[in-house]
Image 1 (cartoon, helix red, strand yellow):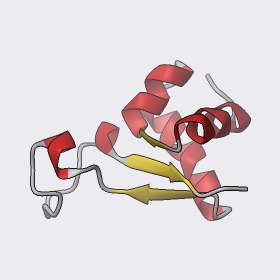
Image 2: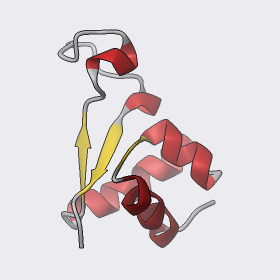
Image 3: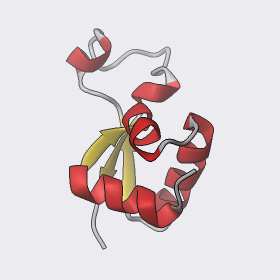
Image 4: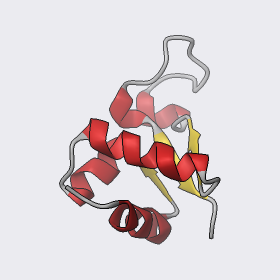
Length: 78
């Protein structure tokens, strides 16, 4: 499982990545990655956003919510 620092470095490198992408690249479970991303969100370093409409096949404004793996995180900086 990746550490907070490893996930930070992955997201810094990509600037924007899905939860699934972070999970695959870090060889960590979705739930663990999401919990660690919450820590970075609370510190104000990461923002959670919806995927682009073409990423999920929808309009980008659905009310059902995105499947967990499609949640996108954006690195805001140090």
